[in-house]
Image (spheres, rainbow, N blue to C red):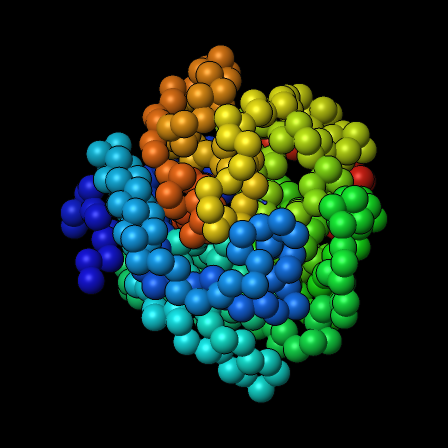
Length: 385
Ligand code: GLY
């Protein structure tokens, strides 16, 4: 399988990315091949809304939906290549295999459409996340050929793995989802009461919003406080902040909630506003947080885990250019008013495979270095004061 669409054939790899907005040079775009709907497990109820068409289903996704998703992923890769961005692709596994460890068993794996969930790029390091879903335990293997190549090509590349969790029943709160209503979900989000406990270090890379010296981590269903403590020790020169969004009944991944577009500007999901105290660090450092435009769609596509707010899950190519899903005209208009040039791309067929344009990509290289965008710190979000 060809794992690379290389706009700059022959160039060697340089791993370096400190944020989601500096000029993009090299990126990984996921693939939908063999993606499965995994069977129930302690964490998966977190992801599947009560009224979802996915309840009770599991197994390989229909082939025609895989083909349609791959068409859109390939198109995204081609457009990025035309923009001069080097694009790599993961090597899918046959995801329809059981996962068996000394601590748990589950019927299938998931897929490798959303590399953003697994790979956290911080400077010259790509850190493999300690994910809380059993079905995603071996997902990192799809990226191993790329990481191995980067290791050979970039002598400064740091290839890191967060502590592997055990994911036994002891890592989750028993009965957390029994007869849970949406109102109860919202109450628990506000109370920071999530399905994972603090026994292990657990995080998805997509819960972490990278802004130079500061990493803002969403405390939610897929990332716990212990992970933030671990990240602070792992990145001693950076500042780790805990944020949460009480309006979100499914607080999984920060990138349909809080999305920086360029230094000083963030769009925030208006149904999930950042609480005032947590806003202080942005206000004190003259960052503007604006409400994102409302999505055009009333519901996600069939068999989709995510909400309609994938409308704001955009891929920023540089401080003036952003890729937005083509049907999201309100979001595109807002981007235009905010001074961004918008590249529209059809992507809704890819949504059910693990998210939007940001989810479907992971940074390898962006221009720019580790800036201090928040020299004035407040105590409200910091993990260490
Ligand atoms: N957490 C992603 C979404 O809003 O769907």
